[in-house]
Length: 483
Image (cartoon, rainbow, N blue to C red; front, side):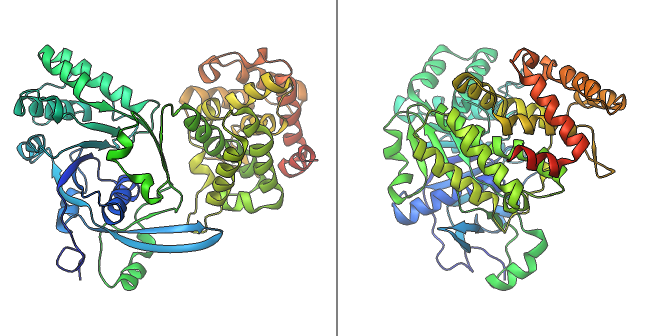
């Protein structure tokens, strides 16, 4: 039996008030789940029209199931391991702009349309000067969106009451500002009238947002077991963790139109999302990135094993609470609560998060996620944070590309990999040569945006820890730094 509106007896159709660009796992497990809950618990009464932003996608599958799919939420909830599932019922239909462009444009004619939500990957909000208004469709997401907005503007003769609220979910800083800026550039490129530009700026609201939920996606390995449990087949089952956070920066009145926090959803409407973005990047992403080289060289392969290990787990916790949190400006209680939730998420027994997958582009990740904590700690305390520096030393050793005689599958910028490979090729086992390796890598401004050798004491301490890891092994070196 296939999941669809015939087999799902509680199926309900809602007026289409939301246009969503993207039909992938994250949006369905995060945004659409929230909309479904708001429909059921807050009388939000909003249906979602989903646009497939690229040629290949899932809208045919979505339409075959009448927009229905099952979401499993797995992990630690209120200190207990919980797995629960629900059918999400808010998507009315899916549109492929490559085969049904006219149907797509007609969405702009809908007077009830109010929100535009998107997740088109970090590269999605980008200006493509090759896009033209007459294309069917335009290549880029902003190109497609601008064409629909222009069609809406003309349909309603520039009515200021027909503007929309945009809440992009792409993982780039100030995503709403970037989307608006890109639309305005396209208006200029296409030489559209000044009235349309004014309508975009005056009738529409672009929010910046930050999203946070781990979504492993489609549970391919146990799908037959799931079908047996559900009693029906569902080609769009998606799994996610319980934790969810959506920070939306925009006018206060948006909160009244999007009543997520009225029903207890972890959605924050704020005047400035910067502290929350910094909190997530420094604590969640920073903990991931600083953990990887230490835990992997220790002989551990997953995040869960790392935080559950007696020594590595203590290293991770103390790094967060003693060296990262003191560099942040939100209330301490709020930061520690977020950090506790992060550690619970790392322990999720339903998610096998491989350290080597997080290790992709570790050097640049360290610069954006961890280096700022090191520099801020030094500025505030006038000493270097020992554990974060140990992690930096471990990262340099990690890029030697070897663990217990086995090659590490490093993945990073070719120049970074080549530099590390050449430096380590000449290593003679001496602390003096290791200091040369450390000094050269820390001087690479392409990675760090500055010469880190200028930070007082940094080169010496990184060298000391890297030499300890090389000579004693990670386990003995880590025990030493944890004393």
